[in-house]
Amino acid sequence: QVQLVESGGGSVQAGGSLRLSCVASGPTFSVSTMGWFRQAPGKERELIAAISGSSAFDHYADSVKGRFAISRDNAKKTVFLQMNSLIPEDTAVYYCAAQKPGQFSAGSLSRAPYDFWGRGTQVTVSS
Image (cartoon, rainbow, N blue to C red):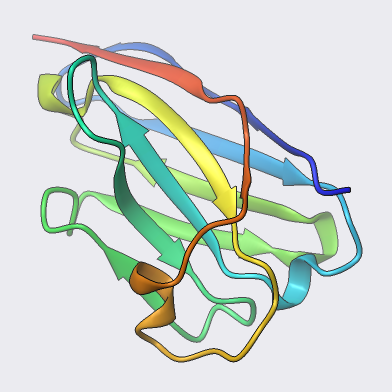
């Protein structure tokens, strides 16, 4: 089975930073696209960042470009989301997700389905 466990959420003031981590189980992490989603109350769950297995490709939502950075350490089966210059609109539950290994293209990061999900971690940004 694949298990994803997020950590690193919390409360910060606007302008601050947080680094989220997601530790994965399973043997195929290094060839699995990983993504970070977020969902605020009353809003749709939104893909905000994704990264391919080799880190050769990434994707960011326009709302976080230039502020957030996704990275991964395949030896540790961990994906990170560095969040800088946080604003109150970033307040949401953040979820780690993984795709099943398969035929890959750059567009798969945002267009292919995500098959495995963590439970989420709360991020709250105050003004």
